[in-house]
Amino acid sequence: MDSLIIPGVTSPALADALDGGAVVLDGGMSNQLESAGYDLSDELWSARLLAERPEAVTQAHLAYFEAGASVAITASYQATFEGFARRGSGRERAAALMRLSVESAREAARRARALGVVRPLWVAASAGPYGAMLADGSEYRGRYGLTVDELERFHRPRLEVLASAGPDVLALETVPDTEEARALLRAVRGLGVPAWLSYTVAGDRTRAGQPLEEAFALAADADEVIAVGVNCCAPGDAAAAARTAARVTGKPVVVYPNSGESWDAESRTWAGRSTFTPDQVERWRAGGARLIGGCCRVGPGAIADIARVLAPR
Image (cartoon, rainbow, N blue to C red):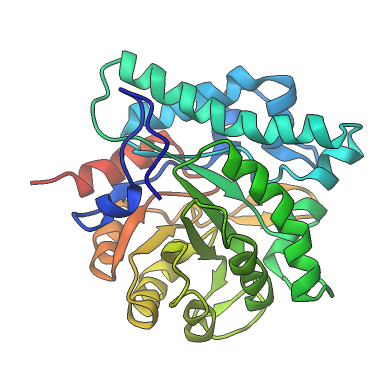
């Protein structure tokens, strides 16, 4: 499917751009919002601001476009019907907020154009795992005790809503195990929007412990999937995972790790130090990565460094 083209704002199919080189993704939404002074200590995380401060979300996207990103990943990672229902929002309101996540990124692209950004810009609609809705850190474990059918029924309705908002791609991200990957791959069929599938990993395995060869192979023959890879993992795990994804699937690879700090789900805080450095980017690209950015705790400064490394010479 070609992108929904808004003159001067979006660009034709993202998949075509991956044939010609690497595309820069944005960084972490939550850390950018927190740096602007917003408290995200809430089960909805950054999705709460879609209801309360949508302008803050647009400004966060704009900061990344100005830093050199070409893809904005929406603030819908934790946006689910179930999560919004716990905060008193019905299905109609929840669906409107999910669509707003895409519209906010589009608005940031418009503003970037007005500021003189001329490179292609795309919007990736984020769909986090079931564990993100639980908001208890279980996206780093997987194995929720649900069947593939049950997980598909959870994911399909919100994917339908996100797809209806016209993103360029669906970001099926931070997937902890192969069972959820199977569900997501089934859930995106027939939506008319391409997708990428990215696992959160530890070493050469998914967070649930499955070998990455097995995990990536699930997407090898999925026509909807334009890229496969990893996100929300340690930077040091990304290069080997990229090589495995490229070898197993033959598809372009997506890589956007965390800063290297570790997340404490109980205290909802980060600990340790950043190990995210620009010199790692060339290794990711050499391994097959064509969509490269950052996840949690990776801000506009790091994205600007990535853009410089990946700039055509």
